[in-house]
Amino acid sequence: SLSSLRGIGAGQAPFRAAGSTSIKPGFTLAEVLITVGIIGVLAAMTLPALLQQNQKKVAATRLKQTYSQLYQSINMAQAEYGDMKNWDVINNIYNSEIKGENPIKVFGDMISPYLKASNKPDMYKISDLGYPGYKTKDGRTYMNSSNTYYVVELANGVTLFMSFDVSGSADDEKKYSYPGILIDINGKTKPNITGQDLFYFHFDSVNRMKLMPYCSSDTREQLLAKCAANSGQPAYYNLCCTALIMRDGWEIKKDYPW
Image (cartoon, rainbow, N blue to C red; front, top):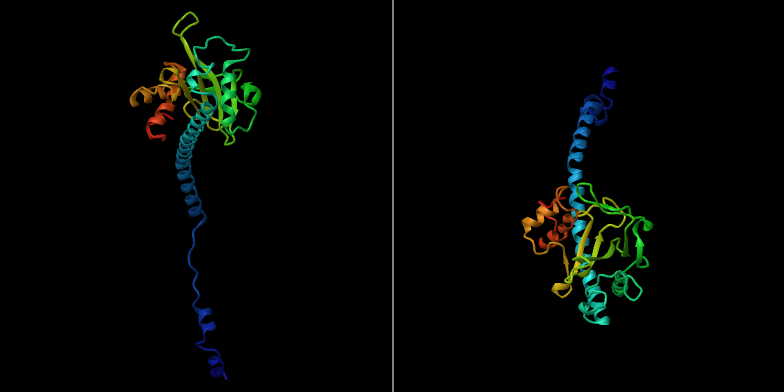
């Protein structure tokens, strides 16, 4: 009967569900697009800052590690050749040749065996190795790709360019020279800019051949100014950034002129 049919399954779950199902509203396409757009804007605003922060951390860390490696290699070389200040390649060298060899090659050959090199350390025109040259922070050329250095490519991706710094002129009796080492903390990878991935240490013969950065005696305020130097100041001023990082405990602080 009609009443018996009405009773079949009446009140049971499947029948209740069919009669009470509701559809929950979701996001419209416009809302989804707006949300994605907001996320994209936030990412565009924050990602460069995060990348730069990471670049600074990597630069400071690798610079410190390289300084440590150089310091250890010098000590090991001195154990073999004696006190560095007495090495033939150190004492008042102005002539380009010593015993038929470039003095920086003599120096490099003495310390490179104690560095973990991935290449054959030797004198190279850096363009022959694929290095494009380096610029200052304001775009001036600091180091041409045609320049020749004693090049050591370390196993960790850092490259060392060794040369001599000379104080005084050819007629100056007080002239002296000392090895200088430019450090590219990421090899051929960009940006190839002084104070960002190119740094500098030298050995000061006045201070018993101590490994030190340019401008090490400057105040922090002076270092900040030189690290940020523009076209109105000498191009090598950006190399004072090395001393600033070292002064700040091997960190790149927020006010560092990146």
